Every structure is written in C-alpha cells, then in structure tokens.
Length: 157
Image 1 (spheres, rainbow, N blue to C red):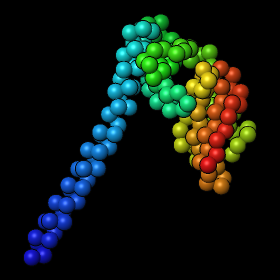
Image 2 (spheres, one colour; image 1 turned 180 degrees about the horizontal axis):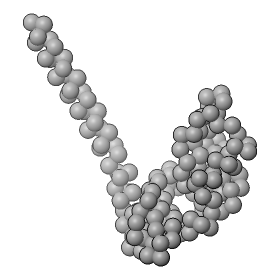
Image 3 (spheres, rainbow, N blue to C red; image 1 turned 135 degrees about the vertical axis):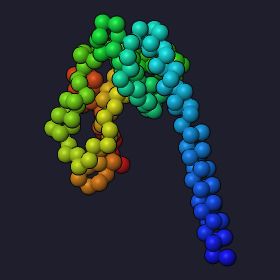
Image 4 (tube, one colour; image 1 turned 180 degrees about the vertical axis):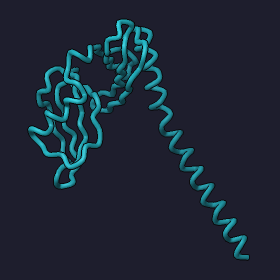
C-alpha cells in the first residue's frame, strides 16, 4: 500500500511540473516570436551579420531592441516598435556603453543588488534601464539617456 502511495504521489508531482513547464512555454511564446521577428527585420533592413543581444521593453510603447554587428563590423542597436517597424537605429559607439552605465547610477544611488541593465525607449528617447534593489530592499527602475548618460527618470516601489 505504501509503495502505491509513493508511486501515485510521484506521478502527481511529475504531472504538476509538466503542466507548469507547459504553461510557461505557452506564456513566453509570443515574446519569443516578437524577438525573432525583430531580429529578422534587423537582419533584412539594416544588414546585421551577428546578433549579440535582444531586449524586450514594455513601457508606454513596447519595443524590441536588437544589438549586433553589421558588415563593417560596427556595433549597431535597433529599436523595433510594436508595429514591426524600425523606430531608431544607432551605433553603439554613439551612446553610453553598457559597462559604463553603472557609473551614472552610483553617483546618485547606492544599489545593493543590480538585477539587470537593458536598453529601453520612452517618448522616442533611447534609454538605459537599470533595475536594482536599494539599501532598503526596494525595487528601483532607473533610466538614463543612451546618448549622454543624463538622468531621465527613476521609479521606486
């Protein structure tokens, strides 16, 4: 009897985990499709040869940001809007580098844990979005302008 209970319990756990994985894949498939479409648009319209990063930003207007290199081996960043049109293209060298972004945050805030640093866009202004936890364990979204590192906005909750 005990053996059957263990087998049934194990089967229930396996089915439960399988369903969770299935729900996760179903929920993530539209995001992956949008990212794949944005990558194809970037490759076709801007002739990107390699893709290094793809970000999805869901602000007032959703954007998919594709970063990669072109045929001249220049690092290019492309913001693709929800209508699958290129909203902006910039050379990575024309803005603040990802590795330098934290310098701007550290002058104003003291993050205890950095969660992510990604590209974004609000009001047609390309931005860096820094997600971090502060000293009080509050979640912060800190935005600086991509072009010059100037402070744009901070949201704390």
